[in-house]
Length: 458
Ligand code: HEC
Ligand code: HEC
Ligand SMILES: [Ca+2]
Ligand SMILES: [Ca+2]
Ligand SMILES: [Ca+2]
Image 1 (cartoon, rainbow, N blue to C red):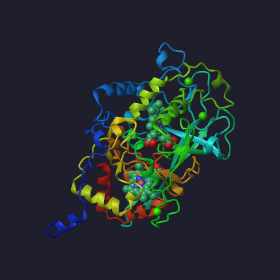
Image 2 (cartoon, rainbow, N blue to C red):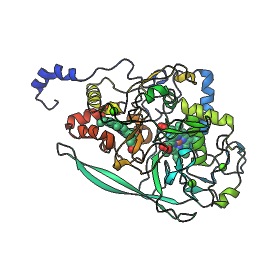
Image 3 (cartoon, helix red, strand yellow):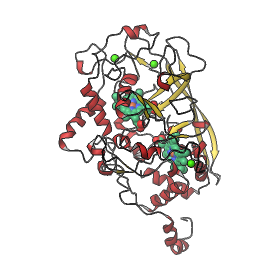
Image 4 (cartoon, rainbow, N blue to C red):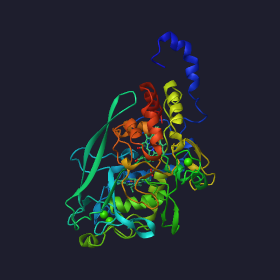
């Protein structure tokens, strides 16, 4: 419409604007009462706006342990020693930089803000992925002195050209991951590698507080309503419950709670034990790892873990920017028309009895259903993760996505960061999301710009 001559645009202007949906009440306050207004590089790092002064103290302690580098044991700083023996990073914030998002390495850079999950075919403990002999369930490319890093990960890229319906060309890059110099025996021929970048940390407690009944109510595993969308829930082992429970976190909804995700990250990513995971991460066949000194039993005390969990659960969601701009509202209409909302469900209301004060009874706009969807072979990792099959991924929340470039100085999207822009992320959608992608491919250049304006306002 913007290409119409000016007089026609003025003439038709009113009716065109009518096609755009209105701003809904509270829509720009993506995280309800936790929402902060900031569009600086610190936008992901604030405590929930509704947090009381007294509770802020815990947040501050959690923040410092999220950011501080852990050191090798034994050390004079006994409060934060015990790193490794093998590890990915020295701090949470090494990957979740500024509470934001990781990315794949540039050519010949080390892997600093993403990780590779590993497994072999079959089922492991409690229906989870099956460990790789000698290597476990994740690649740790770093180790303390005297212990060999597990292997050196590499990624190479191939361009795959494509075009929008109007002829404008684009190119998508396809990654291939390999492991060089494996230190603990040959890698199996049927090894699965699932590369995953660190997601943004905002609003985790709000997502945890969405009532389970509301999430499973959207499941439609056999697509009974025939709309082509068949989301289903993942059920994953929860140590505290000693049972399989609804998975909400991770790229395949492969973690149940923020607490278990955090304790799992301490062990798997940094080599730090907790009450939940009391044993060092030394798979059989790594004797130097098993014999290495530790930094206490556990290395992360229960209090400290609780503070980091509280911190992670209560990071504020930034408010939308320009949510009522005409192009953003037009983009919002296109987001609905293309069927994006079928998975990226805009609005939820958190439980009135949620455990954390700040996240109770909030109307939030995360743009996710927290369900698994078949996204096609193109995005598949071939790897089972509890009930998620090789092509299934959890719909990621889109709140804050327009601020990633400001905070993290990159625009790498999707689970492995292969998309170099928001549009490339959309163009990778396949499987259940293929009709939505095709709708976008047939949009005009102006419509595509409006859709991106909407995404950037989130
Ligand atoms: C080596 C990089 C790395 C480090 C270090 C790391 N994380 Fe993560 N984090 C990730 C990745 C990758 C995921 C997604 C995991 C998956 O899909 O299995 C993730 C997921 C999460 C999630 C769930 C996010 C979501 O959207 O579902 C939370 C919460 C989290 N991490 C907290 C932490 C905390 C707390 C620490 C420090 C104790 C930490 N992480 C350390 C890479 C890292
Ligand atoms: C069938 C469900 C489904 C539909 C429909 C869908 N998405 Fe997605 N979307 C997903 C899933 C699942 C992912 C994660 C895929 C991955 O990481 O490999 C994703 C990822 C994304 C991402 C990247 C998010 C991130 O954090 O990296 C963006 C942006 C996005 N979708 C936008 C859209 C838009 C715009 C539309 C409509 C044109 C759309 N999606 C339609 C399920 C869907
Ligand atoms: Ca350790
Ligand atoms: Ca390992
Ligand atoms: Ca359906």
